[in-house]
Length: 126
Length: 126
Image 1 (cartoon, rainbow over the protein chains, first blue to last red):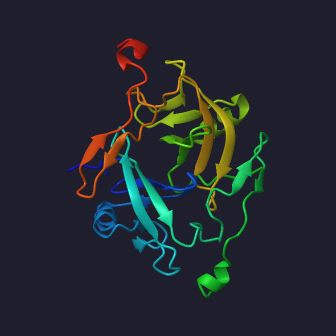
Image 2 (tube, chains in turn red, blue; image 1 turned 90 degrees about the vertical axis):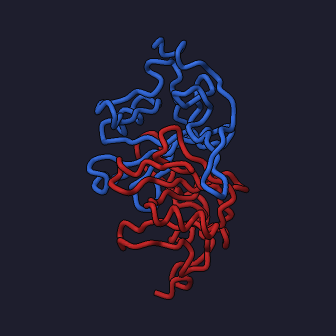
């Protein structure tokens, strides 16, 4: 059994999430030991929400779960890579496919790229 | 000018590095404001080494620099994505293309995937 190194992030480590079909990097979130174990057990991505300070089943509210297809660990055992099937096609709570939808130019300014796949107000009923 | 949020990581935030040609996720490292500015200025990836506690020009020793091709920022401005051309073809100090060369199975065990592209002992002359 692989032993992840949670020590550097005080019990948390970063999880990079990549769409297994498009290869696009969808998001980065954090996991603790409990979310790691839930992810392995259920086959759906679970994180630790730093803002809400609670276990976070991604897609639990929106239905846009991430089905784990492959998991990789880095050389230092302190970062994981989840290759997922993104149900609904969009990982970002803003409605975009990927959280990385702000493209930076050489001067440090950005433009929005990609398109919204859902309306957050409808999905989250806020 | 985009304003990155360095506050959650006490002055550091994670940078995901993706090969612009293969789409493979190569590594995750951390940046502070100085390394962010150096990256924009030089067009080559600079990080903050948490282990050495110093500015780190990736490839400065090995010659395996990362030429920045595209930069994306996430929805919260607290993670960046560098799409790079990896000189030498390997990003990992172990000699593998990617740091994510340990593939985890359903039981939490792993196997090494990919092949070594260089011999670290020769490159780093240790």
